[in-house]
Image (tube, rainbow, N blue to C red; front, top):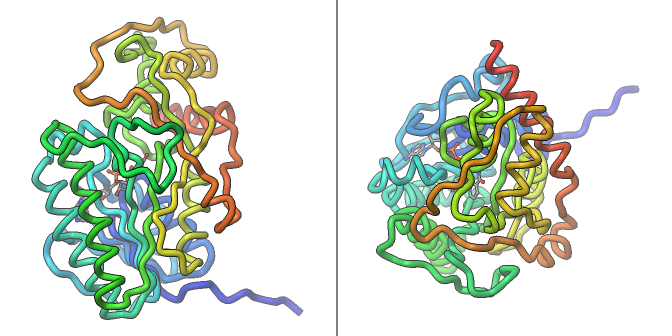
Length: 319
Ligand code: NAD
């Protein structure tokens, strides 16, 4: 006799669900039988990112700007992922980024409170700014310039964390906070300014890969499937967090550029350009907490994740 496993959640609301990470979250939830409402204003995401889910049972796409109050069917999980996330986007949308982190977080928390749902905030390693502690553990308070160009994103997320913490303390809402480090994979936009899609786009076009500074600054890159698994583990827990989710294997930007050239078989060269203001020199998560409390760690090696991302970008070119 066939046995079926009930989905862990009946109905999940995913703000920013038509973005890069959000669309993978929506897909994972729909695949496990959870009904999903994807709430998005398409300021940086697109309908195309969730086109494969339209028509799937239980999937609803709600076009709404969450800086205004919004309502959905009763939900038992609210994943708050709406926010411009790439530097190119938040520099283009500075006020919308601040308002999404503040008003948007307030409205999304209010939704979770009304429905007595578990709430998870997508925060970011950017709350650590240009860190003076390395690797960064959750207890590090960060080194953020409050009036620098990146502050619209960093401070919006720091405020969102404070608001989420106050909501749990003041209203008893079941909240959790994850701090995501750089995540990459299919559905990133080639022109969003982040290193992985930029390098892949340039390599596939045979253009020079533009490495900022001397290329020795490091990032830790997690493949999106690993990140989604960590987020859902956090959602299934009752941890408040913040919990770092990221890949503790560091890679320099120059190494990343050379790896992308190798994996694409491109004849591109590397061109060094100026580093942006307040660009962090190092970024690497301490994931002791995620390992211990969520039994989570990344599984996809960089070469494999990059190869999957490259084949997706190639397929887009020929689609
Ligand atoms: P993305 O830009 O692809 O997705 C963000 C989505 O939010 C988009 O679909 C956008 O249209 C939507 N959105 C923005 N403001 C909105 C608003 N006011 N109302 C409704 N929808 C709105 O970015 P992403 O890389 O998928 O990031 C998703 C979340 O994860 C963000 O909160 C980001 O801060 C966080 N994060 C991502 C990374 C990463 O490496 N991708 C790292 C750290 C944190």
